[in-house]
Length: 374
Image (cartoon, rainbow, N blue to C red):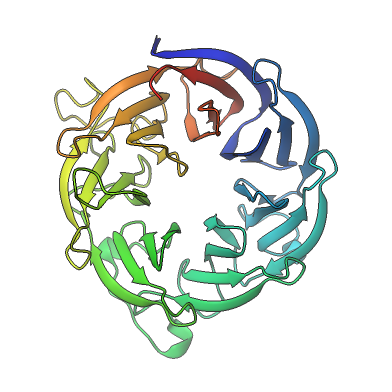
């Protein structure tokens, strides 16, 4: 099922958590060991060529990847379950990919606990969501990679109550431990998704001391965790707009599928939801549906007002927020289910400078898609 989209090619590879493109190189972070990261030449998007693979040991995954235009790739190391060698260490690994077919690890930053989940990376600073000794759950942290062989922490922030080693006590919603999912930077602000604690806007004018600007939470009225807070680069109709995706997992109680919110943050001290968007027909009668039916992740690289979304079992959805009070779907692509799977599980999406879309399935494969809407 397609609308304003066309499949160009398919990369047959283990399923993944994130895709990213720099120039004509596609970087894929995988969900399960031994596959860690795959690098693909997409100079011809109709004929992608795998040029490198990086593995990880049992008990770990490296499902997120970001790369910069100056040839630095950053991948996460995060613990999966109780098995595997803890000595491998959770954190971020840094690679020189100036020759993409010959990735060379040049540094690793390690943290306590299970490691790093998702993050933003601007070529110098990484805005990450690590576990850390003495804290409950994942927190916000900023690393300086001016020397990529030696990343250095320069700032951290957490919800009061997370720092148990400092004597703090938290009162968490429905007893669910707090978890920073990931920060996204725009200017001197971080826009932080914090799972069932909602969203936070932080002032990082002084990166060594992030300060709270505001917060907002739709849980538990809507039981899905806050997954991504994506501020638009430019005003839309004179307003400052942020797209906030809830993830259709880890629900506080059975419910219809998760959806995306549109917030007006023109007054950033009062982030205000002004509209929502759901795949048409997905929530007709309000009945609970199984997890991973609804929303997951918008592309964190956006051009204009059209947002590509990975919508789990609903595939790729292209949503135009030119009128932020009335988001409108302008295209979609429903991939085939991965071999052995009952339905698609579109986990992440990105676009390149040519407007080509890359959609990864959580179980297997990346679809490379062109569209007429950009």
